[in-house]
Image 1: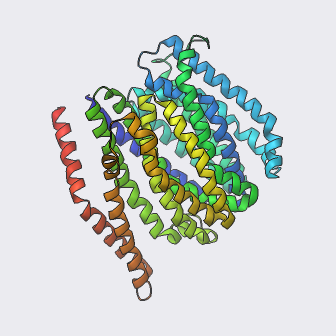
Image 2: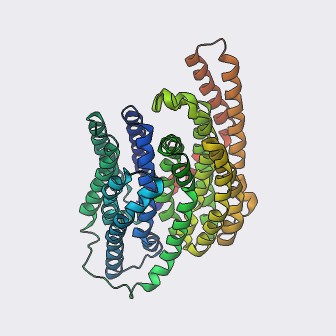
Image 3: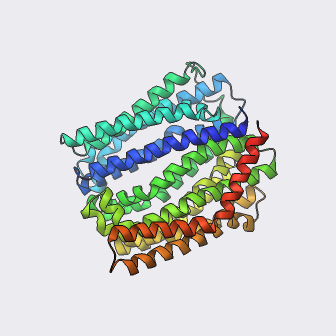
Length: 482
C-alpha cells in the first residue's frame, strides 16, 4: 500500500475512533450530570489536573525520541521502556506522599482517598504507551482504533452502572482506570511479538536520546502549567462547585479539538517525517493540514456558540444553562487552539524541541497574566482572558517557531486560515440575526433548523473552491498511486 493510501486509510480509522470516543465521552458526561453533583465534577477536575501533571514525567519525552529515530535498536527501546515504566511507579509513590499536601491546599479531604485510587492510572497507562507509538510509526491505525473503541465503550458501561448504583464520584474514577487498563493490555498483547521488550536497562547508554526528550518534557511541563492555570485558580479561589461547571464547559469545548488533534498527530506526523527531505512537499502538506483543521473546526465551534444554551440544556441539564456565555467565549479559545495544536506537530517532526521549549516558556510567562486579570470577574472573566490570550498567540507562534523551522512566510501561514475565519464569522452573524428575528414569532425548532440551513449554505457555498480543490487533489494523488 502506498504512503498516500496508508494515510487515507489511517485517517479514516483514526477519525472513526475519535468520533466514537468523543460521542462516548459526551454521553458519559451527559448521563453522569443527572446523577452527580457539580462538586463531584470539581473534585475529579482537581484529581485529573494532578495526574495530568505527573503523566508528563512518566513519558520523559520518550515518545518524541521514538518518533524522530528510525534506527533505534531493540536494546535502546527496551531501556527506554523500563525507564518510563519505573518512572511511573516512582511518581505514583511520590503522589501518595504529596496527597495530604494537595488535599490541604484545596481544603478538600475527599482528595485524600480519590488521588491514590485514580493515581494507579499512572502505572497502567505507562505500561502501554510505547506500544502505541510503535503502531503509529508503522501506520497501524486500524488496530489502535479498535482498541480505543473497545476501551471507551466498556468504560462507559461501567460508569453508567456505578453511577446508577450510587457510587458517586467513584463512577468517574473507576471507569477512567478501566479505560486505561483495557487500552494498555490490548496494546501490549497485540504488539509484544513484533516489538518484544527485553529486561535491559542502561541509562548512560541512552544519554543522547534523552537530550531530545528532556527538551520536550520541559516544554510539556510548562505548557501544562500554562494551559491548566485556570483550573488551579478556580479550584483554589472559587471552590469545587464553580470548578465543576467551568471544567464541564471547558471539556465540551475541547471535544472537537480532542477529535481533530489526535488525527493530525497520528497520521500527519508519520507522513511529514517521511517528507522531511522534500521541503516543498513538506511545507505544502503542512499548510494543507492547517487549512483542513480550520475548515472543520471553525464551523463546529461557531455552531456550538450559536446554540450554546440548547447544547448545555441537552447535555448537562437546566442547572448548567447559565454557563452559556462563558461557553460561547471559550469557543473562540477552542477554535484557535485547534490550529495551534495542529501547528505544534512541527516540534515532533523536526525534532526542534529546544525552540518548542522556548515558545512554551513565553506562553507560561504571558498566559497567567490574562488568567489572573480575568479571574477578578470570575468564570466569565477567565474565559475572556483565555480567548484574548490565545488569539494573540496565533501569529506570535509563527514568529517564534514556524519561520525559524520551515521556510513558510507569514502570508502563506495566515492565508491557510484567515479566509476560513472570515467566512465562519459571516455565517455566524447571519445565524445570530436569524435567531434574534425569528425567535419572537416562529417555533424554536423551526427557527433553529433555518439557522443551521443558512449557516451551512453560506459556509459551504463560500468555501466551494476549497472543496473542489481538495477533491481534485485527493483524486489526483489517489490516481498517481494506483
